[in-house]
Amino acid sequence: MMTRWNMGSPRQAREGQQNEARQAAQGRQTGKVWLVGVGPGDPDLVTVKAARALSEAQVWLIDDLVPETMACYASPGTEVIAVGKRGGRCSVSQASIHAQTLAHALAGRCVARVKGGDPLMFGRGGEEVAFLRGHGIDVEVVNGISSGLAAAQALGIALTHRAHCHGVTFVTAHTRGDGEPDWRALVASGTTLVIYMGMHRIASIRRGLLHAGMRPDMPAGVVMHASCADQLKWTGTLGTLTEAVGAGLASPSIILVGEVVATAPRQASAIPITIAA
Image (cartoon, rainbow, N blue to C red; front, side):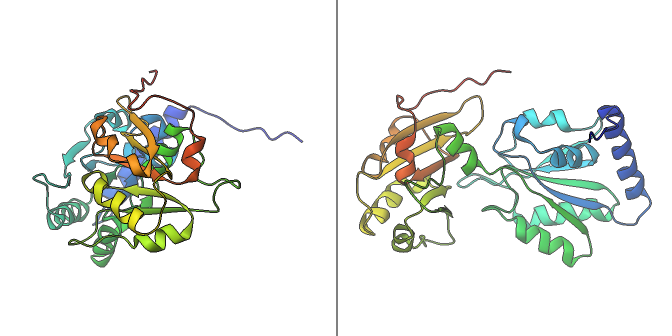
């Protein structure tokens, strides 16, 4: 039995959704906030739901890693406000981000809090959701493709593989104070390690894993700007991991360590990738 869909016009449907959302915002005292993950950088990796939220929002509060190419999803007249936070740089405080998001919502606007990757993966998305809900604001989280997944795709590997490992662990090297992850527990897990925000600590990551018992010849890879036109990638071993820095890779990058990295197609280090328009 064949099911027939009424396809209609995507543009008409999108414009209708935008109008309905904005009329709803005008009819209530407070607006709505979407916490939107726009993926690792390639506009084609934005989900349909994220694209809809971005087009309906009247105000965008964007993180530093959100590329300008995402502007293709904004409706005319959208107010775009940069509220980026980057380590070692002058950044907008989290308190200011909370205050700005709340102010726009209280003014009855539809707000997109736009984040790279997934909004709840190693960021402060959870804090922002709790803050806004604590003030009675309607908040909806729109998941995005994490850069860790895009990095694996860039290397041409599967994060899990029956012949190599039974799981994957996502971990950040950037912790409060001078703390570090429990490297011994991570090594004992036998999983593929996907390490975020680690380039400034790449030497200590290497040292920590080696001291925890991981062998020096464990395959490792680094991907900078995963999925973007200026993407760079490097593969080697845990013992040679710091060579990725000398090959030109820097933040933002994803570090991958595990047996599955050995399945990556052979390549020269630090290969620039050109993505067709």
